[in-house]
Amino acid sequence: MGDETRYAIGDLSDLAGVSRRTVRYYVQEDLLPAPYGVGRGNHYGREHLDEILRVKALQEAGRTLDEIRTLLHQGRHRRMAQMPEAAEPLPRTLWRRLTLASGVELHISDELRLPSQRKLQELASWCRTHLARADEREDTDD
Image: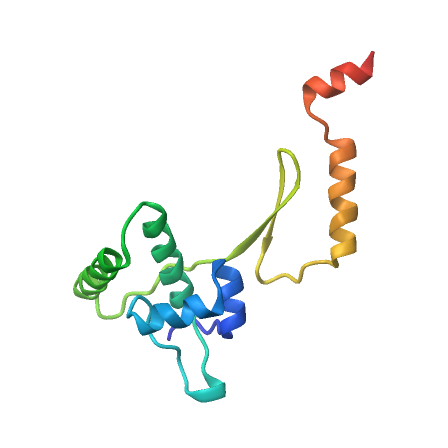
């Protein structure tokens, strides 16, 4: 594993927006590689997250799990055949997206710790108060 990012199953499921049960099911159904390590020391890497997101996108596009499994296996074989021996993977970063108000989003790198829920609520309240839509602002400027 080139990238040293490690996720416990709960962290992986939260980042991917699926349940822990879904992660285990995907591994069982060969839609997702088995975790690294064994027993309580097992963990998942960034490639596991990428694969879950790929499965979700294909499901949203209307593909069945059998079709997705076939596509994933074809893609893995193709990627392995095309990869030069010492190819460096492109760096990827994960971001959290929080909607603070209508039309206002905050993007936070997964490398940063989120502020408390109270602080986030204060920020969202400030945004709703001070970043009103242009047509709403015109009504109050008169």
